[in-house]
Image (tube, rainbow, N blue to C red; front, side, top):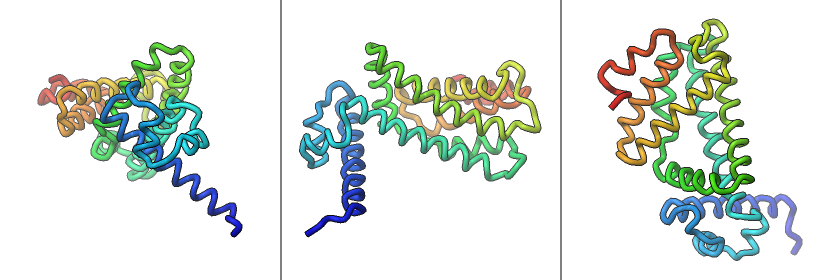
Length: 214
């Protein structure tokens, strides 16, 4: 029986998705760097051949996971900012973003493990920096749209500078989340931090109620 090309493509996509899901689960449980390709294959129920038909290395698999998460974050930011139409209200948009933004502690554990791994490998580090730059560019595009009628705080410069600040705030807040495991508090801190960054005079929000400083 002849297998149609479309069916083969769908089967390959399912295999790839199942490998990504299994790898994420194993990475979160054991830590990136402590997991072998064989363990990923066993968790997914596939052979090594299935793995190598989709990924050359575990690093490549991680970057596929990273792209999934980065695309999700970009979609969440875009959807939250689009709700107000052409002239979004920044504090309201920030609140919507932080309500839905990915704050998955398992993903943060995997990402942090990989960051340490990348820090010891210049080639992997360059690739990770490129992926992070893509995410910042996506965020910068949305910030430029939001602020096309109202200027960004001067200290941030342009939309690219603001995107750097937003990603740095996210990284800092999520690092705390890894330790205290308090997702709701992390969302509150992040909302206050982003509002302060993106609005003139917003710095008072950082200390009002202590939400972003504790």
